[in-house]
Structures are given as structure tokens and as C-alpha cells.
Length: 315
Ligand code: CP
Image (cartoon, rainbow, N blue to C red; front, side, top):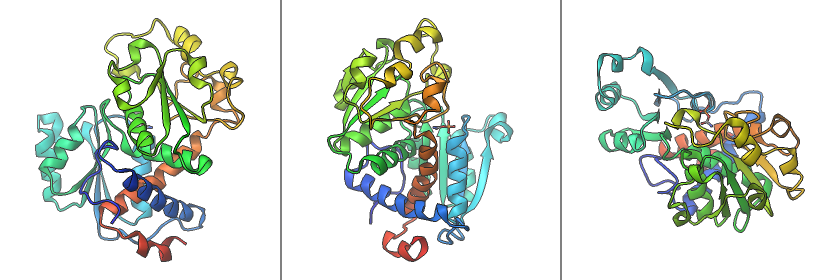
């Protein structure tokens, strides 16, 4: 069994073998995307609820597509039209949904630890689709899947994560996952966007972008999270772009095979120039495609799926 757990809350709690096992199963599901019918009947009769309390394009649609491609029944919860508006708590809301006999809840929420809290009070499996600035485990997994497709083994590879490290759940999940697989991670951004204890996560810290990209195999560029910053932590978007934006000038410093990732949504001409965002080095839409496969793998494995029995469905 690859995942001996009820929930997926973060990559901090996963072992390297579990991460690699998920990525292998995701590659099997990725095979079916090139077929005329991109669907397998293996979650028929199971019910998944998508509980999104924060805006999302990629993660919400990706989970929904993953569920549909596994033939699960789906319910999409809309916080803005729910009884939360009448003062119902998150716990009461979730317990009422669970009482309708569902198997799995996917949740995005603005509060760090909210997915872990639900996992404690519910019997259903909970998948964290992003909890505040804490973790975004499926994003970390899809990023690693994309890196592994291009680089093979990630051990010893140099991954540079650039941007708002302090506010980024994507950075945290990437750091946990990549370091477990033996990659060397460098984080780079303004000092005001760097968590004080970040070196304890086993990363190199660079405040100079040009030094940070030297020798990198991958750049993973983070979105400047304007909505999470109570006060401005850099003077202006123009200033940020000048100091930490990945532009054609930065790309000229990279190794020829180095490629560029971004989890989306992008702030064009803030953390990444439009030329780079649309240029030949970027793999941003490959990340999005892989996201559906990773989410299929997680849903399948947490439901007790056996990868050995998948062969007939995905070959
Ligand atoms: N990468 C990501 O989480 O994007 P969304 O906010 O659109 O889901």
C-alpha cells in the first residue's frame, strides 16, 4: 500500500517512498489523457465534495476533472451561498455534509491548519487543496512530477524557488517534498518575504537573484501574494520586478537546459516578464496538465486503490 493514511494534509508528513509512489501512479493516470475517452470507472459509486472557501481556478477545476475522470460522484460547495452566511461553523458545515454519506472532502481554506482540523473531526478522507500560507501538497506533487519528467531522478538537482517565500504554501510544500527526494533547494526573495527560520528547512538562502539562479536546473517562480500581505513588504511592483523579476536578462544567465515553472496565477511583469512566461523555457501548462493526474492518483490511493490493479485500466 503506497499511502497508509486517511488524509493528505501536507508533504511534511509524507515519506520519500510515499511521494515517489504517488508520482508513479500519477504517470499511469497521465497515460489516459491522450486517449479519445479520458475516463476510467474505478471510483464509481464514491462521492467527493469540493469545499473551496478561497478563490481558485486551477486547483478547483483540476480536482473536479480528476474526480470526473475517475467516475466519482461530485458535489461542489459554494461558501458564498451556504449557511456559513447564517453563522454556521466550519465544523458543523463539514459534519452535516459528512452525514449525507460522502467519502472524501477536498478543502481550500484561508486558515493554516484548517484541513488538519477537519481531518481530526471527520471520518471521511480530507485532502488539503491549500490552507493559508501553510501547505499546498498537490501543487508540490505536480511540480515534482513535472521536474521528474524532465530531469529523471531529482536527487542532487538544483531547484531555485524565487519570490514570496514567507507567504507561500507552494514554497513550503515544494521545500518539504524536494528535500525529501534529495534535491538541493535555494530560496530567493527580498528579506521581508523570507521566513526568519527558513534555513532550518534545509535550504540555501540567497537575496541576490543572479547568484540564486547560477547552476539551477529549475526555477520555480512564486506569485507575489498581494491578498495575503497586510502591509506592503516591497516598495512597488516595478521595484520588485527590477530586483526579483525573472526577465530575459535573467534567463541569459541560466544553464541551457534549465527550465522555468510557475504555479499560477501569474502576475505578468511583476515576478515574471511576459516574454519569459510565454517563452521556450517555461513548462507552466505542463504543470497544469500534470495536476489532474496527480490529483487522480491521490484520490485513488486515499480511497484504498491498488496500483497493481490499475494496469488494465491505464495501459
Ligand atoms: N496554483 C494554484 O493553486 O492556482 P489556483 O489558486 O488557481 O487554484
